[in-house]
Image 1: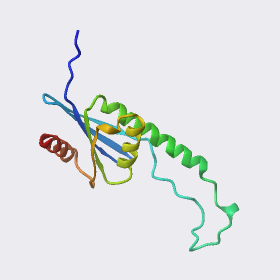
Image 2 (image 1 turned 90 degrees about the vertical axis):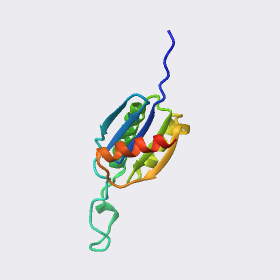
Image 3 (image 1 turned 135 degrees about the vertical axis):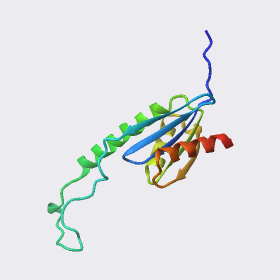
Image 4 (image 1 turned 45 degrees about the vertical axis):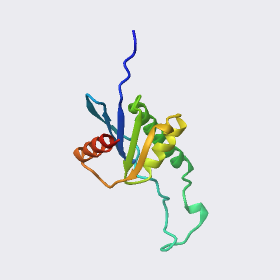
Length: 140
């Protein structure tokens, strides 16, 4: 039995809270939403250096919290990479740092050569994301 190769492309709108993946092939389209369990990016607790005194003993260590944050993000990106499946070409877009971090994860997973483009985009509705992906891949 021969495996039928489907020409599938993918577009990913991503930020640290969620990813909307649009998988497009000549005959079908489907969307997958992956929510992260990542809380807002961590900030140091304690007095602001502009409003209060600073002593090292008063500022709580945040290494453990940062490691947990990084581990949660890593798991999130791995789930997104897994959802991309055998996509031949991948468009990544979104508002912040997550798009670059996803590209690094794809390179680490030996899929970096499939990244067609990385673009900065603000918030978009699901329909706008689908339209952008379909438009991008209809041109190529």
